[in-house]
Amino acid sequence: MASVKKFVQSSVVNQLRHILREVQNPGNEDIDPTRISENYTLSPNRGVHPYSYYLERKGQLYCYGRADVKTLAGWICTAPVDLPETLHNEFFKETYTFLENRYGKANTVLAVVHSDESGQPHLHYNFIPAVIDSKRGGEKICANDVLNRAELRDFHHAWEKHLRNAGINANVLNGATANGNRTVAQLKQERDYNRQYTRGVNF
Image (cartoon, rainbow, N blue to C red; front, top):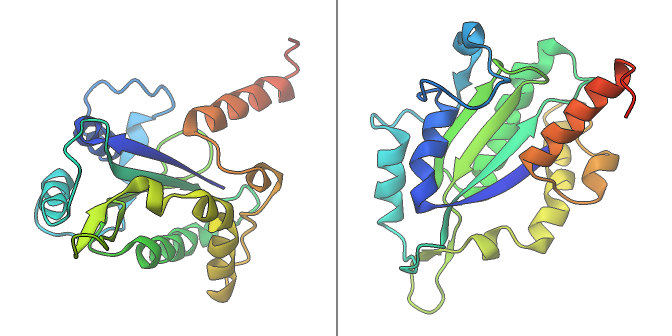
């Protein structure tokens, strides 16, 4: 399944550093430092830090000058539990292709697969939510237009269709996604609850 989050510019650098594991003392206790080498990047190597590219691409787009404008969005796409591990690399490769085609290669800032956390491997895909600017010409940043209700409702259906067309029988449509997307915190909370429940912990 997948979840999405939006970020204001003041949060972008820390978000990218977290994904790249550049934070020396991360607050995420799920990270296993001995497995960081298992992570890998799918986004293009543009020869600059992703934050530098983010600033460069943002400078090409119209953006309202308010501090609360969401200038970056990030999907986290998790490998289904029943997907064989031998298909994980192909699953993430095709998921990245789906996302890049959907939001634009130029808008893609960073895409990294994390295998160093407890639970299933997952892809972080961060992009600048850009749309055509019908008033001024060119493009503008507008997360609400890109990640509108229709997009959130149809995302999992389109993702699964892409995977099946690529020959990957991955079930990303399930009861959890049928009711819309949830935050990463909600997904982790449910995961931790399920772990404790299956261990026989009573609440």
